[in-house]
Amino acid sequence: MSEKINCGNCGMLLYFGEEIKRRLYMRAIPDESAVYAGYGNVCPRCGNPLSDASVKVQIKRRATHGS
Amino acid sequence: MATWNKHVAIGEPAMTYKGVGNAIKAAFIKDPNTLAILEDMQFPEIEWFTDNMFERMIECGIAEQNGACVAAALAAEGFVPVLNNFLFASMSRAYNQIRQSILVDRFNVKFISREGVWGEVGVSHATVEGIGSLRNLPNLVIMNPADIVEAEKATEAMMQYIGPVMVRVELSPNPYTIFTDDYPFDIGKAYSLRDGKDATIIATGYMVTEAIKAVDLLEKDGLDVGVLNVCTWKPIDEEAIVAAAERTGAIVTAENCSDINGLGDAVACVLSENLPTPLVKVGVEDEFGQSGLITPEKDELMEHFALSAEDLAVSVRECIKKKERAR
Image (cartoon, rainbow over all chains, first blue to last red; front, side):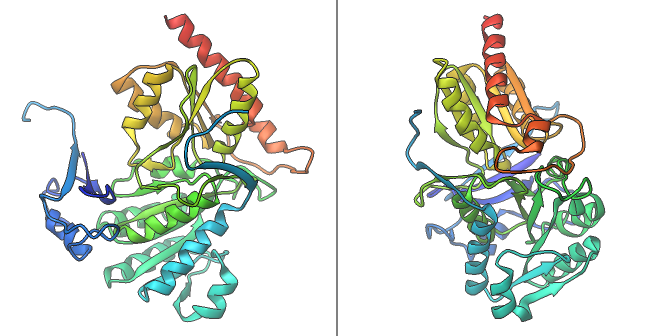
């Protein structure tokens, strides 16, 4: 299961990797806000303020019994 | 002659490593936390770095495991290490350290990794299986630029992105200069050089140059063939691949590396899940890289591995026949 976060304004890839909240223990990145904070909460390419509302998050996983 | 989309202006061959060097230099000037990690081999623009950034270069010797751990430790302290190595050495010797020490914690380490089939470097260094071996590791962005312009833009994007990224720089003949300076590069976006109607060559790295040559060869047969450049292997641009398959109904993949677990397999997975389409893979077919003689008249390795434009054209014709049989 992977997660991709792109800037909602210019499309720059901000995060690609494991689904952020998926790991049970020892998460290197606790939640999406930590990704935005890494960039100073601003898209380095277009200056768009980064928040859950201003990015595009895509999580790729297959359908399962529990989903 | 074939026509090409905007941002494509095919010019003289140029070394992709030079494009990487330009972007790395700019990143080092801009960010004092950027450090060069060497493993007893060249670094892009090494003379400039030796003269201007000597205190920011760390030589780890022929000890790739050590280099990976040093990079991880520096990244943990907030530095941005740029690790320059042969991909075979990363993949085989330092696989565990890259996995455990860098990728699991998603440290901000940048890799410039050399690989491919070219020249007289020997079976040990002319590897073709490295990029495919790393493709299944989570958290790693992988790119394989097609020309000097894309190499510079991909490296710039790598330095801007926070997280582990590998730019594969090919040991290959110098590719054509393909893109204009205003080419809109994005990590994760494939770029269509031309759309075509009869088939699409989905190519990466140096093989985009051979795909461009193959288009002209096939045009003489009356075939209208598109070229989709896939620089980012991971995350791969599924939408662009499916769109190319919808448009032409026949896909040939082209890569300067093993066709097992490579771009061809990645494209095949995307299509088989979304839009099953006749496909032919062109790459190194389950054999090791090796030395070969290259002269202006003859490239022994391109001939041996059947990676030339003429070979690609044969595969395109074969794929179009597959498409017609499937109707």
